[in-house]
Structures are given as C-alpha cells and as structure tokens.
Image 1 (cartoon, one colour):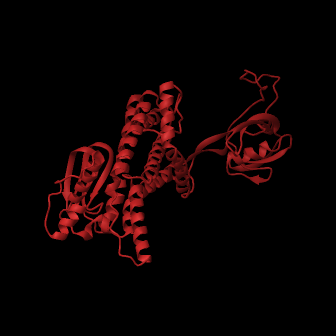
Image 2 (tube, helix red, strand yellow):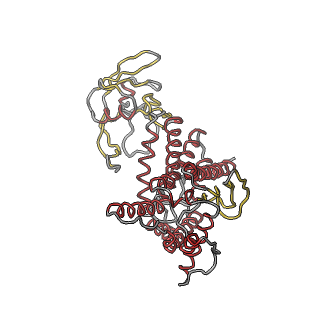
Image 3 (tube, one colour):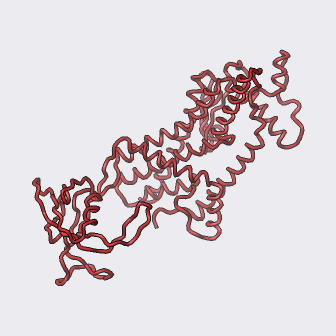
Length: 444
C-alpha cells in the first residue's frame, strides 16, 4: 500500500505539473489570439509529437517529453534583412539560401531568422507579434507567468482556507497529573511528585478555554502567552465544560522551556508552566490568507532564484562530499516527484496528505512564475526586456522628432540565449543527479 501511495503521489505531481504548464501556455495563447497574432502551434512538451489536432489556424497537441511547452506565434522577431529586402523588391527568395558567414554563432543567428521567417509565411504584418504595440507584447509574455501565480494562489487558498491549517485550539487535550523533575528519565507520576498547576486547578481534558486572566482567547497560543508571562501569579481561567462556563484559578509554576523569538531562534527561558496540552485540528483561515501566503512564499523563491548558480554549486558539493542537502534549496522535477511520493506514502490523514501535495504544486507554480520572469532569453522575462527596449527606442525617437527606428532584432541575442540554455541544462542535470543520489528527505 505504501508503494502504491508513493506512485500515486508521483503521478499527481506529474499531472499537476502538466496542467500548470498547459495553463502557462494558455496565459500566452489567449491574449495573443485576442490581439490578432497568428498562432501556429500550442504544444505541451518537447520532442516527437504524440497527438495533435488542428482547430482553425492553430495546431494543438502533446509531445513526448512533458518538461515544458510552447506556442508558436508569427513574427516573434522582425523579418530577416534578406526577407525584408525581398518583400520590398516584390520577389520571393529562398529563406535558407546563403547562410551568414562568421562561424558557429553567426550560423545560429541565421537559423533563428530562417525559423522566424517561416512563422511569418502566410500572414500579413498586422498579425505578427513584433508589429504589436509594446504594451500588448508585454501582456502576452507576462500572461504565462501570471497564470502560474494565479494557480498558486488558488491552490494555497484551497489549502489554508478550504482544508485548513493545523492549529492548537483552545480545547484541552490532556492535563499532566504531576510535575516531573527536570532532566529525569521518569515517565510516570509517583506519590511524592507535586500535582501540576493545571491538575491542581481542576482543569480537565475536553475543557474549552474561554479566557485567561480576563482576556478572551481564540487560540491555545494566546492562552499560553498569558500563562508564560505570569509565573507564580494566580490567574482566573474561564472554561466551558458540558455546555456551561465556570471559572477556575490556576497558578503557573516557574519552569525552563524552549521559546522561539521574533527572529526564529530557539532559546531557553524561565516561563510560567501549568502542564496541559491542546487539541490540534485543521482550522480554515480567511480567504485572503491564501494570497498572503503566496506573496510571502514568492519572496522566498526569489531569494533562491537570485542565488541559483551558487545554490546549485553547493548542491553539487554536498552530493560529492556526502553532506546533507539544504531542504530549502532548489529541486529538479525528479526531486519534486520524490517529495510528492513521500508525502503521499506517510501514515497521516488523507486531508493532511492532500494539503501537502497541493502546497507542493503551489510552490512549483511560484517557482515557474519567478523563474520565467528572469530577464534573459529564451525566458518570458527576456522577451519583456526586448519589448521594453523597443518601446524606449521608439519613445526616444518620438521625443526628438526622429524617424521611427527599426524593430529590435532579438535574433542577434541568439548566442546569449544559447549560453543561457546551456547553463540551464547543466544546472538541471546537476539537480537531477543530486535528487537521485543525494535526495532531500522530508521524513527520516
């Protein structure tokens, strides 16, 4: 059953990631069609086509490697100089003839121009991406990442507001009969051990704490904060028992306990102690808690992406030295799949496992959102930068009453794009290898 649950978790992650990619591309597709751009293909995955069907002018389909997706828009870049000259002369020239000289990168530039010219075949200039106003190009390119962010918000809202967050409630789960000496290995109360303050006050499991020292409380943490701040001082505690309220008096004793400061550091401090524990249950949070959690986690993801090369390098070092990996470090799809399998296989209520899986998918969508905003081609952020630069050049020419400049030819950046792609492949390979031989483990 554990193996089956592990497999189910991996399948859920893969399907969820495929849906995330599909929605990302829809985020590009819908505004592109709305602005009149000719879209030749909408594909999920890379490699050989497994299935496709044409509706209107667009071919929709799935490819063999579900590790991404794309839409093919007419005229992502301006036509190559050769094609533009041919158009002006009114004669057609063969797009692949006479590749640019100058070596490997020059050939890559010419190949990119040839591929771009092919997307322009059969479409007029008004239906090409590069002819759109700058703001429309930016909307199209941001549509994909924004779709991932919105999906993450929906998933996190389901988790925190639908399923709920595990919270210590004001219902008492257990009351310690006695106070055991510090550092003892004793587990049971003996006749000479003093009664705990909670037991001495008459608190019982099932009691619901209404207020402490005159202050109404909604969570166990609020009640604990009042108790910890008042060692040795009698506190009136109002509880609800069997449908009726009654007031009990509890005097917290002084004890050493670990406390967590505002900076997240755990230290030992002398605080008030009464000897009771709370019932833990899932408590739905307000609807705005999901978007707040998504925004907060986006900041954390930005920190990881900003340091991605250094973090991948550290992951490689940990892999070769056998050190334990940073659980908050970057993961590949393989690592995310392993985590999903572990979550699905743990011995926990179904809602707990479902919430963790949905949270993992939300985190992946936030990673896709942030990653695609990196201002480098071939990522969406790179296309946004190209559009902004084109807009700046046009605005500058208009300001000084100069003729409009030619559209930015981003195919000249193909060598940079090539370097970025190689770097991404290398980092992805390192993460996949690390996730196989030195995986991040949530349990044990």
